[in-house]
Length: 161
Image 1 (spheres, rainbow, N blue to C red):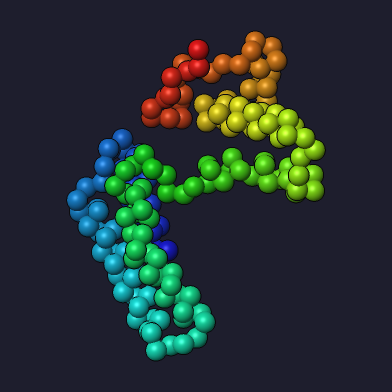
Image 2: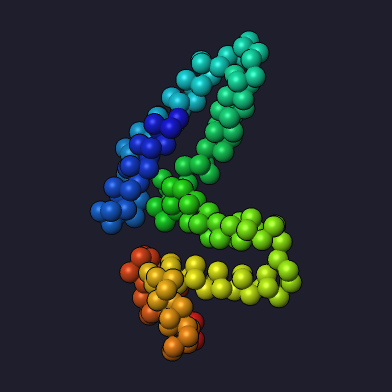
């Protein structure tokens, strides 16, 4: 399954890089064939008569891959969807680090709110291609604001007024 998903990602990335809006029918067919083959292989490698815990977990995982096929392969039918959710995880990481270093809690509700506002501001600046340092420098010298267009996004949101 890993090979099938990595090949799907390679095809989707190549399509994005060339500026295409979608994968071709042949590319989607190839991805579907690889995905279906991986599911068939999982059933062969982990038959129901194998009662080991590992085989049971493998069957459960394969069943989920089969049930959630459309969602898992969304990045192939909508090229605006990323292959991973790493961006979302990067946004959560500072909160988890703060939690770990402060004993799992904030001293006041206002402190938590302030932390969330700063993290949101810095996360948005990063998505606009502005470094964290530059964003903080601008904030304290000229005030908040973002450029009219982002070089890292296909569709830029309207800048704040």
